[in-house]
Amino acid sequence: MRSIRRRVILASLTAVGVTLALTGCDDLQLHGYLPGFISGQPDATNQTQRVSDLWVGSWITLLGVGVITWAIIVWFAIVYRRRRGQTGLPVQLRYNMPIEIFYTVVPLILVLGLFAFTARDQTIIETRYDTPQTIIDAYGKQWAWDFDYRNEQVYEQGIQAQPEDPGTANTGFVEAKIPTLYLPVNRTTEIRLRTRDVNHSFWVIDFLYKKDMIAGRTNFWDFKPTRIGTFEGKCAELCGEYHSRMLFNVKVVSQADYDAHIASLRAAGNTGLLGKAYDKDDNAGAVGDQNSGQDSENAVSGN
Image (cartoon, rainbow, N blue to C red; front, side):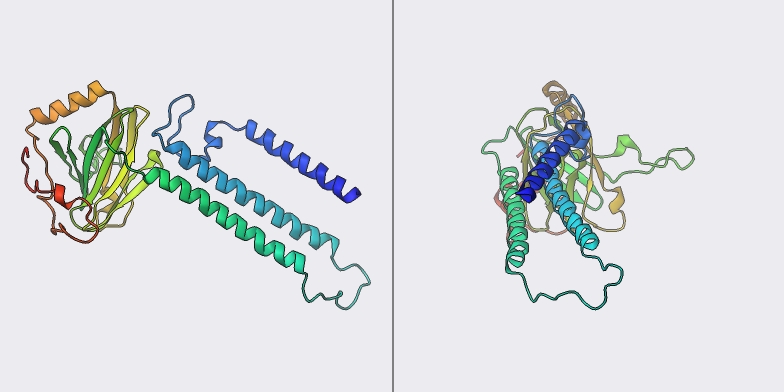
């Protein structure tokens, strides 16, 4: 009875401690120090909170397992240590069935639970919109990005990031020459990801998600940008000598600013779609290309 009472008190104190610790956390701590969150502002996309919850929940579970494991190790090291004057070995047990069942079943439950939550969230994130309001064809290439605004029939062709003048104090890249993808805020968006050469990976850091660009295949990323701002992106797949310069920005803007950008592309003569005109290897029709039938615009045209 005393042992049960002690366990209840210990569990209550632990719950109180965890509650107080969590209530004392700021927004950044509650999101596991992940990027994409600013206190008092909307999330970067409609999916960042889901990713954050999965991340934080996993770490809390693992932290709990770690604390219990280390507590048991310390407990046994202290309680069952060799005392002064003791000799020989303690009584040896061949096995303890309840303990063996415990340390087999509990890890299995934890692994299956983490898998189930991951599969659930991944399924939701990977679900495509039936009729996305904004459709972008993003092409990775060594070592830059091309963007086709499919609904508006305009394009933007990028070059790899250019280093700052070595004569200045700056050691980064010229911001104005980094390819920039514009997206209207609060509109369902689908980005169709393709590569013109080797495999790349499209990663917008604050969006907490990335997807690979695989030769001969079209991948899809559907989400809704929910906060106006500029977000850094980069290739997350080692793709050659200048991989580190394969940068881009995503500007989430109001609908009016988005329309103004589209108008500026038309004024610059960037009408039509680039399509696969600049691919180094024609992968049309390869296994897994889910969109080859829509890529007949292999040259810059209005078709």
